[in-house]
Amino acid sequence: MASRRKYSGGALVLWCTAKREEFTVEDGCLLRDTRVVIASRYLQKVLSELHLNHPGMRMKSLARLYVGWPNLDSDRL
Image 1: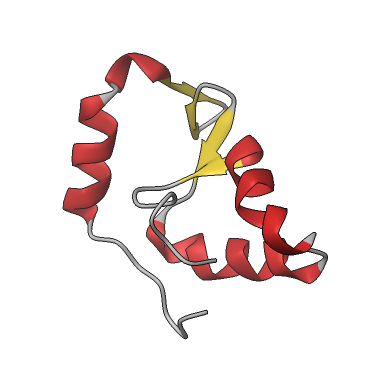
Image 2 (image 1 turned 30 degrees about the vertical axis):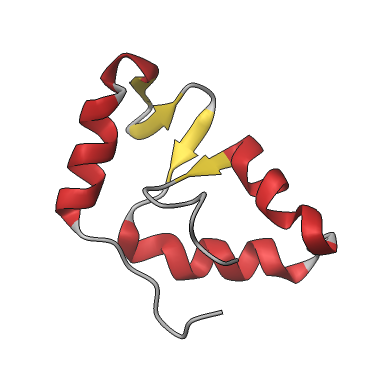
């Protein structure tokens, strides 16, 4: 895992714009369908939490159920 993961604000805008009908805001949280969109500033913390008890190769699949961010599919978790 990289020591610092970030994505640019532009990447988030492009990601959100491409599928804008899938996004909502509830209680101040940006959601894509039922998944919480993770801001770049919190990405490292979320990845640390996911790695605490990850089920090996299924970690990315598990992450996709609850959270999302630009490049999740191409990131190496």
